[in-house]
Amino acid sequence: MRLGFVERMIPVTLDPRRTRLRLYRVGDNFLAFWLALVDPYRAEIERGLGRSILPVLTAGLDDFLGPRYEEAFRAHLRLLAEKGALGPDVVAIGPFWTSEAEPVEIDAVALAGRAREAVLVGECKWARRVDSRRARRDLERKSAALPRRREPLRFAVCAREAVEDAEADVVPISAADIFP
Image (cartoon, rainbow, N blue to C red; front, side, top):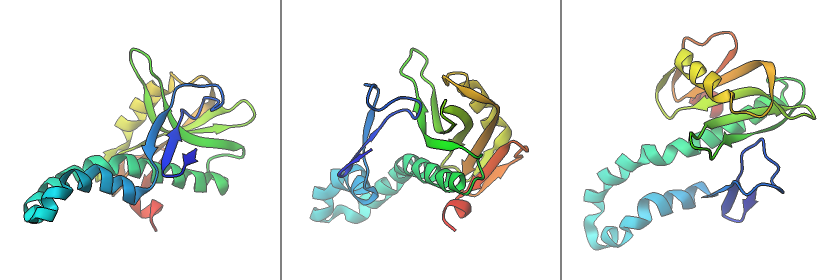
C-alpha cells in the first residue's frame, strides 16, 4: 500500500487489516536513490569532492538496486498472471517473510483462489547469472514456511542476464523480459 512517497509492505499471506508485521520503504525510486546514495554526501559534493565520491556511490549502487529489482520482478509476475501464464485464479503477488527465530524471506509469492494458496514462489537476484537448480532448492526449503500451498508448486527465478539450467517447473526471467 502506497502512502505518498512511503510504501507499507506486509507479507502477501497476511491480512493488512489484522497484522502488525510490516515494513516501510520509500516508494519513489528517484527519491529513494537520492536519500540512500547521494544525500549522505551532498555537502561534500557541493564543496567540490564529487569526483572522488563517485566511486563510493558506484560501489553502493548494487546494494541499492537489489530491492528495486525485486519489485520490478513482482510487477512482471503480475503481468504474467494477468495474461494467465501463472494459472487461472491468481489473486495476489507479493513478498513473504517471517519474524521468527530463523526468519524466512521469499521475494515473490503468487496466491490463488479464495483459499489464497501459494501456487508460485520466486527468487530474484541482482546478479548477472543465477543457477536455477540452487535457487529452486532454496525456494523449496523456504516454501515450507508458507501457511497454504497448492501442489504442484511452481518456481520463478530471476537474474539480470541469464537463469541457467532451468527445469520445466521453473519460470526463468531476466532483465530483458522485465524491461523489453
